[in-house]
Amino acid sequence: MKRVEGKKALVTGAAQGLGEAIAKMLARHGARVALTDINFDGAAAVAAAINAENPGSAFACRHDVTSAAEWAATLARANGDLGGLNILVNNAGIGSIGTIETETLEAFRRVQTIDVESIFIGTQLALPYMEPCGAGSIINISSIAGLIAAHNHVAYNTAKAAVWMMTKSIALHCARKGGAIRCNSIHPAFIETPILDGIIAVFGREEGYAKLARQVPLGRLGEPDDVAFMALFLASDESKFVTGAEFKVDGGISAP
Image (tube, rainbow, N blue to C red):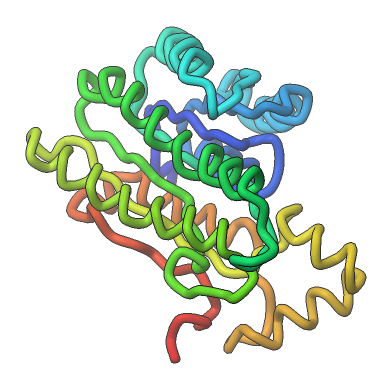
């Protein structure tokens, strides 16, 4: 069953990791997808792979999500090429390791700009394109780090918590305007994507993954499709009465 047949989506940070998995999942289930990333070559390669499976369903754009001008140009192109916009997946983001004493102000600000401000800019500029298309879904990729703090993730904890709360504000705003557009956040724990490269560099892949898996009640790391399936649900009309909610894809980390 094609669960998002005929819908038009824009996915940021789609050159790899969760963005790649979500873009592929949406296309596989019938959506046409604009893949955006500051890494254009990577996004283009993913779009080509999607089109090999589902011809004509994807295209790539180079896109710096911190730039309002690039957001405006990217959204205008996506709207024109796709014929509208139903789904916005704000996935682009970075991490940083540092405590309140060791993190630099420069790094702290960079994380907030990429992880938080980009969603503010993109959503604000996307709504005028989404509203004429009727039912729509905004999906913000936060993190379990937005709900559970760590001593050495001060910048990342702050950013992902902001994404969580901004999602709720956007959801309530859209509901007051008539409820056609919904907004929800997804909060993954440790997923096998390049965001874990830092711990791999320190401990090696096997030991690093094992160290993380010991923190997960299910005893393993998540796969990108674990998050992509959640995004598919939120993008589809199956979730038409769901807004302002947070969805944990964390293997039980937040349960205790």
